[in-house]
View (tube, rainbow, N blue to C red):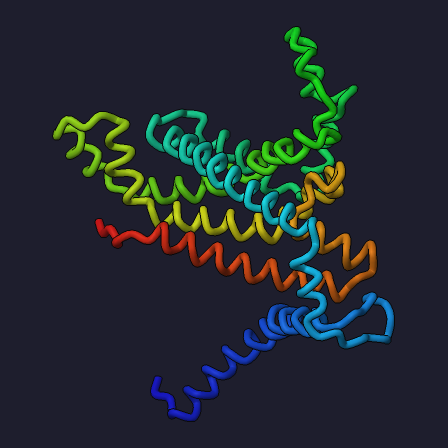
Length: 297
């Protein structure tokens, strides 16, 4: 069907404009609004906004809690990337290469946490860590290891590490399925050729599987990094509220506390700008370190 140039341009605009409007309303407008409010002293509920320039940014660099929140966020990033990717890779390879009959059932079981709300996961694990009735301390008592039982979420030393386990548990299924999709597309002839050359299963994994599914690995790692820096505050807010003594505050939970608990919305917006900048820098650095030549097969 022959179309005139005018009709073609109209069709392109018809496809682009609605998407751009939605993107502008839900992404660009909040982004620039947050940047705008960061230059004001505003409670978030008053009509009075006082322009204070870069005072909020000066306060940001002088706030003793901010370095702690950054360290906590990157601790969660590091532990989640290592923990989730190791477990997801292990189960993906096991369910695709070992020809387990119950593989479809295990896929559902591993993916189940991903259909649960993060709030529900946080409440569930709060009960699991309960000092008196939780499964963790009860299990330690049953094994005769009651000396290791402790108030996990109430201990400044153990509260943050205790958040790692539910975060990893909730994320394994999604990335396992992503990696399984990549492994399923790798031709069996590569493994047969490697086996003929005398490669062990471990060598086949590192020399064949990993290079050929590297795009899926890279996407998975970047997704974990982005969601951790921008979304880990939900789990923190539900399970610890940033405590005890700010030992679990991440940037997002501290933003929430400043903006919606202390009604310091301008400073909260400044923390939001910091989260954006750090997220972009972190993703850029990860992309540089994970850059590889494209492998075709």
